[in-house]
Length: 261
Image (cartoon, rainbow, N blue to C red; front, side, top):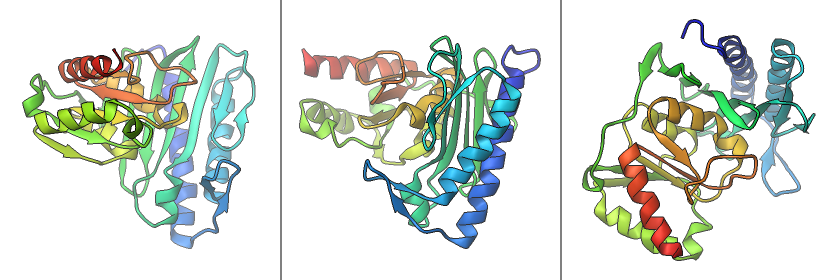
């Protein structure tokens, strides 16, 4: 990873994720009260303090860059460089005492995602990637599997509530029947598995860009393809995900496209 153009920013993101992890571990041991936000999703003091810890480090590391965080919003919508931060993605899991939550930090430069850090402090797993620098897990570079045939593919679905209401639900059912196996790892977990070759396709129809921006860089730099369900590149309005090995992603995209024809 030496001499990569985004190395300093990546190091800052990793430091910020670790600082957030300290906050999260503290409240995981202690317990927290839960508030309900205007969009009916839960939030805790752990979310807010973790984001503040992240913001403090990122603002110092990359002056002039804007920060768009889950809890404190967007501080500048004209900057060329934009940090995308979800300090505790999976608050529902956090408050129900399951370890499937994470800190997500990504950097977007002129609309392009250039680095990402995904840290799950209780689950005990961190991955990171930068444009041209590959994807790293436990100090080793990782890649997606070479899976080519849907019959050999392992699929995972996350939030698919919207997808169940239209023709894509039947498409998903057919893919499940044609695949080797189906799982629902959800959250950060299935993207980590995809990036390190243990899974072949991830499908979600109801996400926020802050949930998946870092994971998109991680999957792409591992040799995978990461788009929305229509095959479009990610942007701040992205609400769905189709991520997979190149061959399996292409086959899944073609199937979903036929459903909309």
